Length: 204
Ligand SMILES: N[C@@H](CCC(=O)N[C@@H](CS)C(=O)NCC(=O)O)C(=O)O
Image (tube, rainbow, N blue to C red; front, side, top):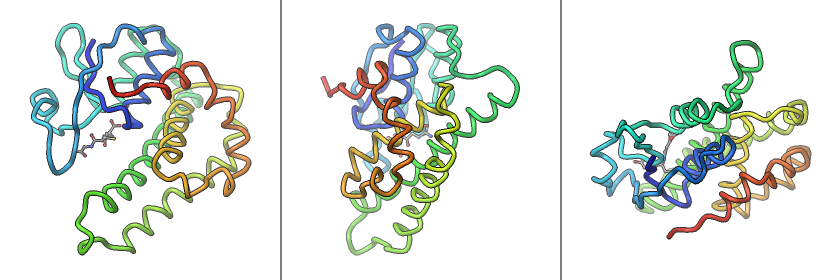
């Protein structure tokens, strides 16, 4: 399998953590890519018209995207248990995945607003709205997260990658000080072997 890759993409990290968890970590070749909403990467677009990472090419040459689809595919290929079968656990895991992805979407929009958009066109209210999404998502995780400490599924992986991205791009935001319960329950999650292996990844 081949994965269009960018070392700072939290969605790519989510896919790689999933691959490690289901024993497929060494089966994925990383393809260098430069996904960008303005200077779009033609190498990715050939396989994924959205031009985004992660995009996976299976051994059969089929292109899969986005991270949700790729993670579910890897879990099936590796006979993992990261996507619980039908029932309340499944809906909870998928909702947490959506929460982590949504938090990341807001963080990425802030990043693009502040780094890609010309300064004269930036809109402070837009950034404030996205930052508020990050806050309300973290608050939910702060209040409800400890209750899910016993399990481990795609929701935990997604939330872990979202927290990793906040550390990478918004260190001054200080989410640990603002949300101490979240900081406490997520500490072992962030130190899980699959996570630390992937955190250590650098561009080749
Ligand atoms: N929903 C997608 C989001 C992927 C995404 O937004 N990736 C960013 C990099 S972190 C990207 O490729 N941006 C380029 C663009 O927006 O065109 C997923 O879960 O894979």
